[in-house]
Image (spheres, helix red, strand yellow):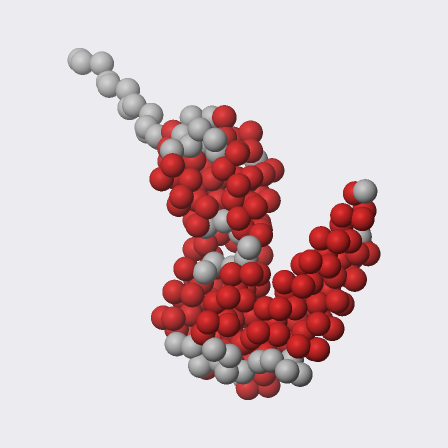
Amino acid sequence: MQPTAKLAPPVTSSSLSMYRKGVATALPIVIGYIPIALTFGLLAKQAGIPVFETGMMSLLVFAGASQFMAVNMLSIGTGAFEIIFATFILNFRHFIMNLSLMNILEKTPFHWKLGLSALLTDETFAMAALHQEQASKKRSYYFFAGIMTASCASWVLGSVIGSLAADFFPKSLSDSMGIALYAMFIGLLVPSVKKEWRYGVIAICSMLLNLLFSIWLSSGWSIVLATILGGAVGMLLTRRETE
């Protein structure tokens, strides 16, 4: 009677293991993204943006605040150049975050850095910074890819579902979702103001500048100029704090 051969344990590659760990780490982001993405999809449908374009916008732009702003500007007839320029200004902080991420992923191949930087958001950057010790491990870029791709997939999927489901929502509920943009920004602003009152001053200055510029300029350019000058006010206030 021949001895029974022992079954070999399943082989799991280190790359796949790291990627799965990254996806698991991203679950809090995924849970937070889905309801906001659903709201974005609904508002995009209300603004007349088709489902495919909504999904592509979430995939290619992948920046919640900018997408909400762009949809709002589209709904009031703002030109394409103004929307693109305003989005660029609002997302300029991503250059700073990407420089920091590149320092974390110093030993990562360039093509991986390029792909990961394209999927960076405030939330994924914060999660990557909290787990930067993973960067010293072998094939660590799969871990960070898990964080980035899981977050992006939830955002795109939520946007598409929200757009598809828009026709099934009662009109009263759909109309009330128009305040989602303002609620989101207030939700982001209030905790910051509690920690540092200067952030409230910057927000109020930007709001007043936008109101002033809108008298002479289109809504798109007034947002752009208010964002730039509001940022300048923030630089002056924070410089005084450090001196």
